[in-house]
Image 1 (cartoon, one colour):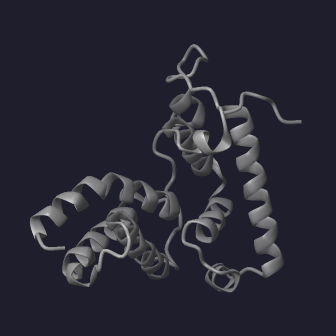
Image 2 (cartoon, one colour):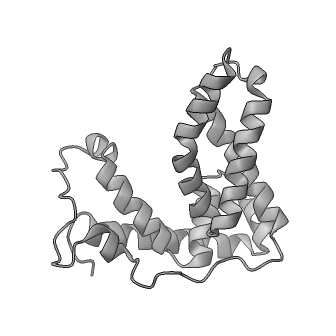
Length: 189
């Protein structure tokens, strides 16, 4: 990166996305803010090492993954989750208007590839992920977002591999059920 001001502007534009990703994993606004701030500082300090072999956002998200892990290790003995601040902030209130209709109508789902690229789908998916119970959500994000291997997750959370796979299975099932209800509009049995 030749221009530090340009890099700074690009990082500033990425900040909301980085913060949302950190909050999904850490479930604590202050910790997420710390991880994002450390990520941006690290990116600015090591800009010379960015060889543009990937997109800037990919590189920065990679840094964020490590900073989130640092926060998890640092806060290992502290309370893991904040109490919800607003009891009315649920999937239903974020996705649906008070009259029961979508706040923004989802577009038709033509093919799976096209639908996955739709912003509304990801908003519902994100809301479903946030609704996962604490430990299930954390395990799912550690595995799928942080891409940690099973041994690392088991060691970090002090659980057995059998328990890990059971939790991942439950998290995927709950995500499927949530998407079935809140995106596809069909009740699960």
